Length: 282
Length: 282
Image (cartoon, rainbow over all chains, first blue to last red; front, side, top):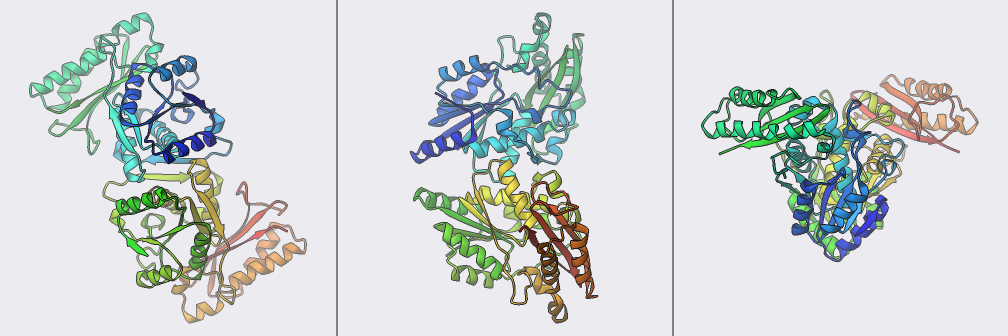
């Protein structure tokens, strides 16, 4: 496994690999790798010959009051984890390498898809995501790239961007990996105190309860959302950011779940913002 | 020479050509090809093995009151001209192929570079340009792409976008080609009446006069601009849209021409908007 810090070097190596006919798989990450990332690495290994992981905490996807500065950086551990899981190249650029002075070009997926859920709550977040992903795609030029279902809206937005911009890369979205108690794996789980960690699985339990009701023919979105809200609010450590059900094609909130929909939640547990989601389909 | 109308077909053919080791050259156009375009085709032929020309009148780079509908379309003549000039592939997609229903992703080069000259006068124009060029680059995946110096601000913006977004394509900007009387070649010259065509070279004459003054040590931007304005206004058929001198690095208007600068002009001749420019360097 090699660690590369410059765009130029990535490009030179990848072009050689492609010339040899290797299929390039790519997993963009912000580091602090956990089993959720590992599952993406394993999918990449299965689907390609040469796996590239980027580790870059992307400043432009954080709002001014968000956790860019304190976002966990665990590069030495990340390297070991990548090596263990058959990664061939870790791309670990500096902020200056990615955003040199004068940088001012942005990609934005407009329309309803970015206006709900985290798009409504984190202004500019997905513009930062679309921009860095476009840049990384142009640098790594992979054949296939893997994203996690935990960040459901991100995955939808990336897929839309790839389609709209004719980016010649196959996007694979891989299932959410969870702790034994149901908590969705996330680098931000590291922020949780012991007390907070103990109640964190309530989010997944709330989604499960709503999903069960849906399977029992509750299709009213307001009722399903109420189930989630009630369950999460039962623990005073939580402050709900949003609970929403959106159509997975139009991304408009639905009143009744009669087409494939996404039930998504964001909640603060203390100062830590956690997200999770479940598809409402039978 | 082949004519291709779908993204899928372009991609398949280009990938085969690349596998054979051919270097792909690309000239994006809106058709209505003239000698200015021909010079770009010839540069592409010189610098690459397989030349692709796109012919697509891009709706999203026209403002609501601009000339999208009446923009000249001369595809049969264009094909003949491409064939004559050793083009291998003409990509001629429909609007629907490029902007299918639901399309909503845009690329924008922000900052000062887009805020002056045509960027100030044609709101959204360069966003439309950056978006279509990104898409065409992703579709054609050329090694090199050629743009004309006549659209100076566009060329600067494309170069900035390529740098900012790490697009792995070399950009070549090729000199402005002119009619014998000095008028810069442009598809929009077709709009001019006989009377208008007769006075059209005044724009170039105005730029030449200012350039001569500059060579004679006039560095005050206001004086140089006045020379241009006076010359153009001497003909009542013209209505000046802007005359501006900007630093070619910062794109801020300058008061004195002490660094490489661009003197650019846009003027309506009747209903036709013409642009031209000259670099102020010694």
